[in-house]
Image (cartoon, rainbow, N blue to C red; front, side, top):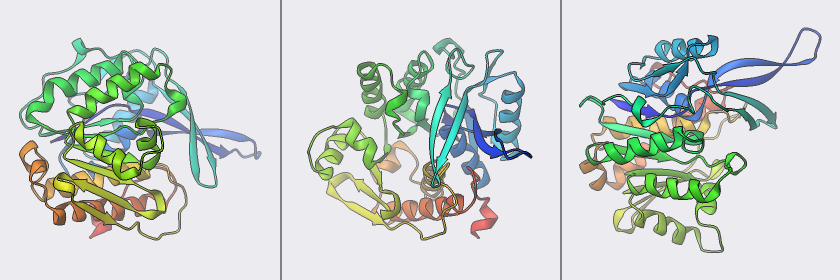
Length: 309
């Protein structure tokens, strides 16, 4: 099982009411949630570890996870409110305003963490769940304590405007990345992690020295590159589609990569250290294929496996 560990929240999407006034429609979302949904729809055994509220939004999130065949055994429930993210779309690109204080997701502590069964073979972490304390420290602790026997995929998905304590966040992210087998970063993420005029290749090398066996750098419409041990590099072009919006695109890409690595037998500690260029290329190509379907329709709506067959 791939266990997706992190935020599940409600995206308040802009819409027009009957009178034409701006209103908001509550849609289940969150970077980690989106990847879990995509993995479940792709037929991968997937679970979600997150803090969910018992309120109506938390109930919506749980129902949507189950509807996409995601195991909710490891969900931590409380009466705290659900995180809300109000979305603004400009030319199909999303920006967010978060309401996350004292939320069910943010307030989980290490004492709340369940014991993970042996069938959990990989952890997926990242997003805003690695920003807000105490939950951010809880997820970092989970990675640190479980990484020895499980593959770890980290997508920082850095949103600078959400970070209030840069030093603490950097220290936490460095610790999490040191335990990662796979790190997926955008070029913007990489420049935030390593600010300065260094060449992109040098920044990738620095990140690889921190621990991950595979670094994936996404470059929007220019595709993605995977950097493997021994200086090997694989490049895959993005798929050309008519873009409706980019909500959930990166999250779905990650699911495609994870699904293919799992199917090929590489999603393990040992497997990632022996990852071949052919397997890496296949994983990136599958991620691009899955993400292309998501961006061709409104919202984070990943495809089911039969849409790819």
